[in-house]
Image (cartoon, rainbow, N blue to C red; front, side):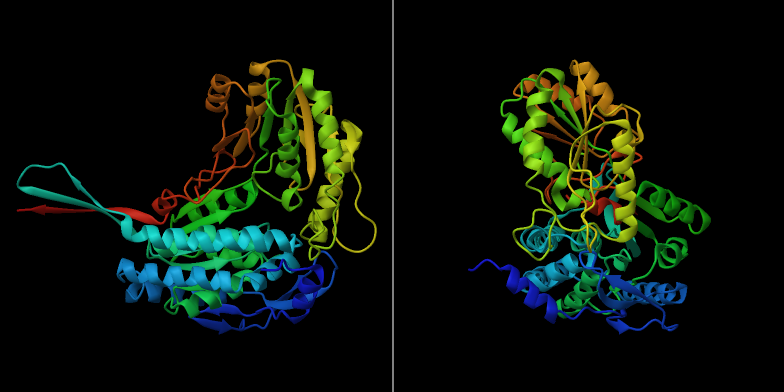
Length: 494
């Protein structure tokens, strides 16, 4: 099988036809007011499409459709084998339409199309397959009671789930919410980020083609201030599953308090530390991983290893290796397989990242990078700062761009103290050849996932989420089913 070339992706991009209407009740629906917002290609500045800007009226319609489908039982009470069949078919359709979905994400938010095609699409398909296979293998419980009683404990779907997802991995983040929510028998109203709605709208069509009943999956594109708020405040939504910034996650908690006390599962930001000890067995591997951990997806990753904490005695050696490797991450056309980084998502976010870089130039020592590329597009060089002061803005705040902040430590206790000195607690990495140290440090780090001698490890089988202001939501694994179901006890006296 040939590997798609730059010319292939460019030709395919010219033919792709984005869906632009909301998807409600099993079909595309224009917004009644006719309002739209532009979807812009951040690599070129060109407009891809005008997408429906859903209002509170559209959200009402979507929630009503979801509620009707839930009460009908067409999905919520269908046999597990039937739900399994449809989710497995959807996984196949995602694979079959993989190039189209990869292009939509690449054009929409600037990511490398090869990453979207080789990583994001297979993971999305695999996740629908994984939850499809899992849903008929989960069991209820029988509680210990007196012999004249029978207490049955079952997990039942919550009802209508509102899923609000970010723009950095549009297809995958939607899948992280949809696959377990649908597997559990819920109906869903999905609100994609306004910067990247296109793959979600196409995914809804594929789900309908796979056999998902009308109204079980609805997609309402629009702004957070209007569409997201309407979903968060809606009195007939039973649960909000959210991935995005900590500030917006807090907003959804307020919406729940102001409305119907719906469950909210926030999975928010991070400022993840990467600790490299002097006994690291392979400094080259650590340098490779340090670069991948911050420059992959242009650094637009909530669990990006954006803080590098390195033992003072190896700092110069490791920093030299990282500086060399950073030169290879030259931003370029996201449709070109030779590019190592794509474009940042939009002009607003690019300006924010540049502001952080400029502040870093004033408060730390620039090792490499530090510039926005001239010309069209939202391209920023891979940037490394050292001598970063603990407590400084670039060390504390989530930049969400290709900016690595390096600080040295003197001993293990110092490293752990600096690593945990953050309002976030999403992920961390540890590099050491000492098994005891790896276990000791991993236990001491306040992070939802600690990767040892690698970075940002995840899989369908393991939960993803954090502590502190990274939120308490958990995606992936069987544990994700917990947040989309409720425990129900049936007590029989006999």
